[in-house]
Image: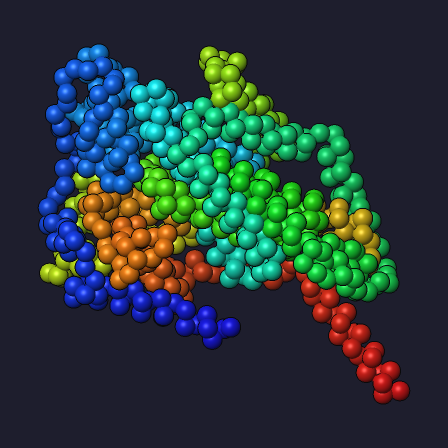
Length: 427
Length: 209
């Protein structure tokens, strides 16, 4: 296995070089002379602003644009179907003369880089202090703070396809932040040999199925309104987990754990009898084994099913799903710490990558790179601020603050999504 | 504002693509150099994040090791309840470390979206034909695909020489220190191995007797 691994990357490089050689010699070619296109791209400076196009003068919002404005793939087709702005059509339309905004669409909102950076610093700060809520707040940024939801909403009646396409870009942008970061974590854990392959594979099989399935089924079909509603529900679940952490019961458990640790350490010094190891049952549906008297049950089927369900929720909403995965592994599958470590990062990575790939390569969804880049910078800065401010704010108060925030966000999104208006201010 | 930044980026990055005359080779050489640049800058930023958070990381790692090892010792002694309690505490600490590592990992990827923004502007309309039709992917790929396939070798190459590069050598030491939990955390698998060896020894003695 080690020998195979050693030759994996050189073989990959060889394949890439062969492909490049094929392109260079013209053995691999396509209509449209792409080599010339590449040369043109290198030699000429492309225009930075939107190319003005001629717009039909009248016709209300019923006249489709008919021009893809140079956008490739699915977005180009959708743009061509969008009404062009005129005196009688000012909302839910595209003004080709307007400056380029989100995704390069003329007239689309252009998230302010400073606001984007500040919001991402806030997300990074949450990641490094509270944890799970960071992914949710990244989503709140894309939906509300950067004005993308309102922009998508404007196309609800004039071009529902663009409304749904923009909803998908919000989902994929969320996934990018979590997925790419989990990728790097996984590489580190893999190097540290912290990933238990059989369990990770069982979970990943389910996760891949869920991620591909939900992306295939819902890409281009979910309106922004529904997405916001479901996102709000997920925020309530996170709020529930965080609230439990602040309850007397949970705090008493932590206190008891510390006391038990003390007693256990004292008892350990005196020595004790080991009870031994016994594998009770091994199979596809159930693996039961005891390590020194402690019983573990691990069902590859349950793991795959859990991975499947969590991936459906995570990829549908464009969140990492770590807040569901870790309790699933520790409380339902009852796995020990050394198995949970690394495996969760691996599964988050797999489902995010599969989700992103399905949305982007199969469904033609795009992301706006400058926004993703600015957010990564912000998360990086926020992650360094978090540990420095943590000593000034007690953990319990931090959690309480986020529970209140999560309830507010949950109420706002759920009511906006399912009732059509927010029941909390701003209405 | 983005347009202005793109113009600056364009001035800085396009020379990488004008090193050779052949357009295909120029594109791939330029993209490989950009991928290598992303790897180098990303690794520097990760090192900076870990260095800035080293005390907090150390505290969390110590706590993780403590609870995990207590859990394993509880298992060794057969205290099932104690095992589950300590394991839960270890998981809570691990949760914090996990999300912190996600935030640190973002640092590694910071340069990539900016490079892709520029590549989209320059090469967004270029299709790169594949030698054959690949199910799911199709017959051609775009600039993102070419960047990813060149980023992987660049990253692999960097890992090979990292220990010999001045600043990156120190970053590697920092990374190793932050990963010490792996070495110091006891594992139930180790207990199993220990127990199996013990059982084997007893069996051998019985057979000899």
